[in-house]
Each structure stands twice: as structure tokens, then as C-alpha cells.
Amino acid sequence: LVWIIGISLVARRQLIKDTALKMGAGFRYLKEDMIWDDKSTIIYPLFSTVAGFCAGMFGIGGGIVKGPLMIMMGVHPAVASATSACMILFTSFTATTTFAVYGLLVHDYAIACVILGFVATAVGQTITTRLLKKSRRNSYIAFSIGFVVLLSALLMTLQSVMHLMSNKDDDEFSGICSSHLNDDPN
Image 1: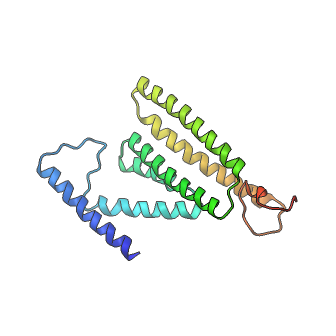
Image 2: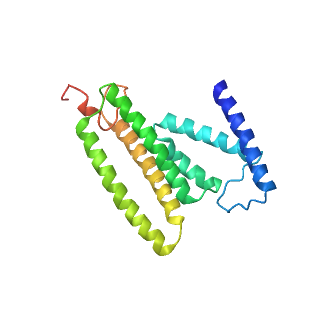
Image 3: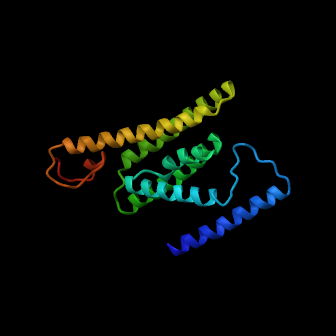
């Protein structure tokens, strides 16, 4: 924890210094650019910490939480979307690796998810690119991030309600794929 706080303070000081140098040189910021000052270098890391804590507690990737946070910060929607996707890539890779190392990876689901992920990404990227070229509005990206977060919240709620309504006697909460990990057919 001390290490993280120390690195954060060094990064904060560097961001404020870089912003002051840019301002002194007459650099003109775009409206989507982050201007790091004394307030923003405290507020946004705190928001990010809370977002990361919530992501860890609820078992969702940090990118799903950070995308809306970056849009709230004023980051351009295309940049927020790309950054969120990069975060999701690394958290998903880490989770998949962990499951594989512990022998919990269900290979048929993994293959189906990889194929579905690539196809859905290609289709989504093609449609979004055409839509953005035609309309020249970045709000579609922000709405798609919001839709994904809403859908994730609804599906997590549905899974929780289904678990509460089930007749299982055990207190262990299991995911939708856990039936493949048990040897007991019941």
C-alpha cells in the first residue's frame, strides 16, 4: 500500500509539472484533453481506486467500471472505449490464465467464448466505424459503454436472484458454468 501511494504521489507531481510546462509554452488543449491540476490529480485517482475496489468486489473487469468514469472525467469517448477495452483484455487474460493454472477452465466454453468474442468484436467494430463515419457523433460510443454496464448489472442481478430462488442447500455461490466442474450429475 505504501508503494502504491508513493508511486501515485510521484506520478501526481510529474503530471502537475508537465501541465505547468505545457501551459507555460502556450500549449492549446482540446476540450477532450485532461488538464491535470491539484484537484484532478487527487479526485480522479480516488475515483479510480473506488472503481477498482468495486470491480474487485463484484467480480467484474475494471474496464467496465473505468469506461463510464473516464467519460465522466471528460475523456473523448473513443479514447475511453479503447482504454477500457485494453483494461478488459488484460483482466480477462489474467482470469483465464488463473483458471487454466488451477484446472478450472472449461475448454468447450472457452473455445466458444473466444470465437464468439472475435466475431462479435469484428461485427461491432464494423458497425460502429460505419455509424461514426456517417453521423460524426461520438455519443454512440458513450451510449454503447452505458448499455454494456447496464446489461452487466442486469445479468448479475438475474444470476443472484436465480441463485436465491434455487433449492440448493449449500451456501456456496456458483457461476453459470460450475455444473461442468462437478462430478455429481445432480
